[in-house]
Every structure is written in C-alpha cells, then in structure tokens.
Amino acid sequence: MASQTLTIRKPDDWHVHLRDGEMLIRVAGYTARQFARAIVMPNLVPPVTSVEAARDYRKRILEVTPPGFTPLMTCYLTDRTSPDEIARGFSEGVWVAAKLYPAGATTNSASGVTDIRNIYPVLTRMEKIGMVLCVHGEVTDPDVDVFDREVVFIDRVLTRIVSDFPELKVVLEHITTSDAVDFVRSGRVAATVTPQHLVINRNAMFAGGLRPHAYCLPVAKREEHRLAVRRLATSGLPNVFLGTDSAPHERHAKESSCGCAGIFNAPFALESYATVFEEEDALDKLEAFASVNGARFYGLPLNEELVMLERAEVEVPHEIERIVPFHAGETLRWRLLA
Ligand code: DOR
Ligand code: ZN
Image 1 (cartoon, rainbow, N blue to C red):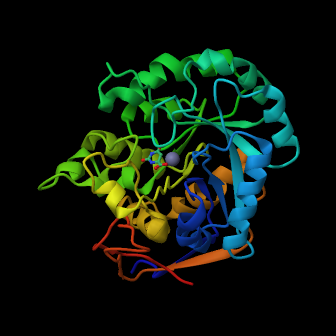
Image 2 (cartoon, rainbow, N blue to C red):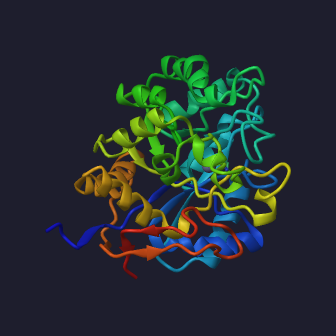
C-alpha cells in the first residue's frame, strides 16, 4: 500500500503576491503557514522600485506574519531603474531579485519596461553581481494573440536576453506552454510552475459559462501544454521549482465586466501540488521541486524544518477571507499537517 504520510523539508514559494494594507493582513498568513520563505512580487500601487520602498514593504510583511517566515524582496524594473540602486539593494540584502514586467502585461504593470534595451545597463550590472532576473514572459503587442504571448516572448525577447547576458541568472516564471518547457529543458533558464497551470487548461475558463476565478496571466493554454508543463514540473530537473503566483483579488474585482487576472491558491498550494505529483507517480520528486531546487538556484541554504503531508481528503471552502480560492468546493487528496 502506498505510504500514508509524506515528510519533506519545509518548502519555499519562489513567486507570490502578498499585496499590501488590509489585503496583506488577510492573505499573508496562508503563505507563511505553508512556506518558510517567499519571493514577494513588487507590483503594488505604486510599485516597489526603490531600496527604501522594499525595506518598508518587508517590514510591513514581517509585522503580520509569524516568526520564522522570511519574505524575500524584489525590485520592480522600469525604463528608468538605475544600475546603482539595483546593486545597492542587493548588497544591503534588501532584495534578492529584480522583476521584469513588460509594460501592460498584467496587473499593475503599467510602469513596467517598454523596451528590453532600456534595461540593458541594469542587466549588465545584475549579471556581474549575480542577481536573479525574474521574468513575466509575455509580449504585450496587441497584434499577438493572447494565447501566443508567451511563445512570442521567448522568440523575440528571452532568446536575446540569454544570448546578450550569458551569465545572467534568469527565471521564466509561471510557465504555461510546451515551448517554454522546451526552452527550460535546454537548461539555460530556470522556471517556476504554479498549481493552476498543472491543473487546468483553457477550457476551465469557459466551463458552462465564463469562469473569472480560472483567469490568471499568463492564461491557461491547451491541454497538450498543460501535460508538457506537468511532465516538466514532476521531472526532478534542478532548474524547475515551485512558484504559486498566488494573486488574490476581491471577489467583486474578479466577477466584473473587466475582471482582474489572478488566482488565490495560497491556502491549499502544497495540497494541490502533492495531488498532482501523486497523479504523475512522482511524489518522490516533490521535495526537490518544492524545497530544494529553488534555494540552490538562489544560492540560499536549505530549510532545516520539516513538514508532513497526510494522505487524507481535504475540502476546499468556497470562500476564504472573502476571496474565492483555487479549487473552491473541490476535494484534494493530501492534507498539510499543522
Ligand atoms: O494572474 C496574474 N495576477 N498574473 C500576474 O502576472 C499578476 C497577478 C496579480 O498581481 O494579480
Ligand atoms: Zn505573479
């Protein structure tokens, strides 16, 4: 009989949106319960573009999370980001990575980068100091079909970044396509994978009607892409790791004539990943994906604390903190023990 419990090092979340203010207070505990560390996205309003803003934001997160949780901060890159500011925040230990949002690609990305050449001096410095670049890999050209934005980004932008900056450490985040999978398998970049892109394909957005809670960016793609992403995530490859992209929005902001992109998956993220890894007969690879590969990539120590998952059904509520969570109303087969 298959083992009924699974004990692994405490995982880290290498991509999460913790928001700010009242929403931060509502959601941060869910991430801190599951993860020892988390790479916190900087797409606040206004975005986190300075060392001081990142330091202040980190303090606000620490005030509302239990001891033992470590938020790892990121710098939001704009056309005007200065290489010196980037290097200062890195050497002072305020941020561990910088985030590239192509301007207009997603929530609060209006101040993002309009042309990759505008940040070449920044990338030069990051390559030199060994700082990680986290990439939202979608072009924003309105002529490009929404479902092709990731593959076109890889062709037009990412291949240039990696050839012009051969030593730069790059994470292609929340990958959704077999094209991204192939690029990551080549080994030149790392990737994070979300629970939703392992579980849903694009049909989920239209199942019996329009389903705003299945909408995130990059959008889920065809089934063949989901299957390719699943094979990669469960492969054990060292450059592939966990990043939930948990992105809470108020219910009314999702259920709207112009609904926000983002899926709130933090409350049951590990349960969701474990269910997928079991379906792929790859539970032995879960610890590498969730707790080892990311830390090694970022050059951080592995967590010593352990967590235990039990093979037991867990019902996901329809609403948590007045937000509709991922898997709402469904039953998952693994439970994270307190
Ligand atoms: O679905 C998403 N939501 N994708 C992103 O890239 C941003 C995020 C958010 O901040 O809501
Ligand atoms: Zn994100």
